[in-house]
Length: 398
Image (cartoon, rainbow, N blue to C red; front, side, top):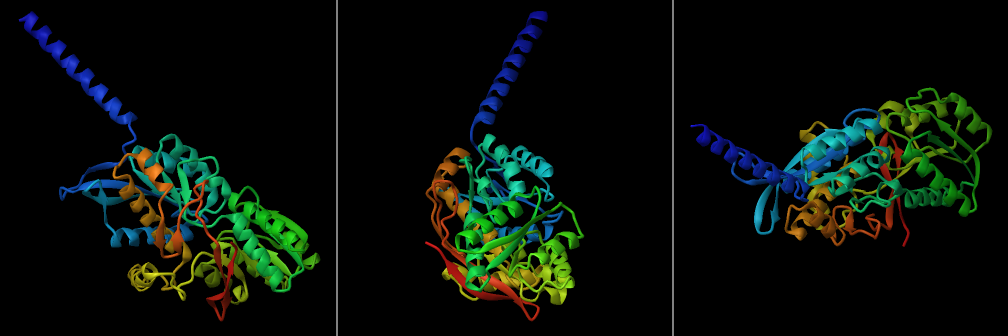
């Protein structure tokens, strides 16, 4: 009996070791999140890494809505001849660098195959090493700071970048007659500080003068001191890239101080909550953005616009299409195209396929350069007129 018992113990130990070895090998492979759903279909997981709370929560939701709608339109993907259901795994990075790392780690633990996001460059930069180390391809949607993709082969993006956006807004200011500009940015925020610096550089290259450069702290609500300094410098144009939470405060307090200069910013200002909170003070603000629904670029855009408007209505959102929602939609399509091109759920194969992906998205033709950045040459300038976001002009750089 003892010999028989010992024999069974040896068999059990051997089986356990084999199981551990098999799990170890599987864990070291580049295979992403895949399993079988309740309906028997194979499932592939795509992480959605966005701020749904914090100062960028409003913009993050807009981006998520674009991804969710894309998943509704294209719920499956062909992988090597097999149909997989696409499951979205959403995490809230809370508009915070530390929380962003935790959110990214959760997506890795959930074994997602790819990641979409984020709205906000700082959180994307913070999470980038996590995705790279796990060899999970990430597609930035509206994060525009060059540092997001620089030196990271696993991070791509579908938006234009801040050197381009800064140049666009500087040229608009100069073409509008501005000779002197002031810049107001958020200390420690990669998006705000980076875009402000690129605007300054371009404005001076175009022959303009930067008469004042000021910074403010995260969560600051009183801007009267820095705005008083800016007013004393008598700028024609104030460039103040900031969050949708901060923007109405800056705009309203500037007007209350009697500042009449045009106030401009980047893509984050395309949000109706700024108008809701700044009221009449928002009249005349200008900003750059990625998309204008009045000029659909192709058949995909023509199909997207009415469908997404209905989706916004169903979700009790304003029926004005935010550009970041469009980027969420395009980013999802790029992800599916890369998976199909790879013909595999292997994340390294998908990363390699992403480099050569080219699509006709809602924002137009889209492909990537050597840094993983979208090749973009067009931006839209919009303003607030009669309480509504209104198209102003298109600017193009080759």
